[in-house]
Image (cartoon, rainbow, N blue to C red):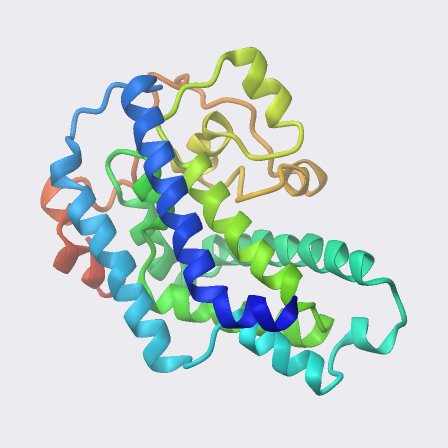
Length: 267
């Protein structure tokens, strides 16, 4: 199984990415949560363009996948879970939970540390929020995120199956919870007891900084509740809240070239 996953990690991740992107895009068309004032054609080519650029930059600077790195770690017996005899299923569950906690912690740090925020704010400068916002990150932030995940995988000795499953789930949930898809309120309440929903995460993209610094989770909602960063609703309501950050309100900032230079400009 491990050999199969290592051989097919890239196509498996790509297939899951495309499938979730298409499903969420269709959901947004059929049942949108908010009326968007800026159309997809002004945003999607640039948001999808940065995904392609991210992929190229990561492959240039980190010429291995996280799954392959996990296989290397396992082969050399590195990490806590390779030193402590535990069943494979336990090792996988623990790895996925701790990787999710690491991403939550990373997200908090990228808001709290000014240098990291300059990189991360490109994600927040989108003037609407939909499925493509969930994959809109600056290439430098993506490289740092991959290095952080590699460090966690190395310390844990996370199994290949857990790493690949976590990557697929994290990518899927990021597109889901950034989407403009409408869920019935009763279903949103039920789902957000476990997973971050679009209504929950949308608060995080409010122009109000107190709301931006809340609801940091990308996958499990438990971390925000445990660490006191959970906010149920934005003050202006889901339909009245303003998306984005104060520094980059000009629609010209939605262009790919402007997005990439935002960390180096004061706005």
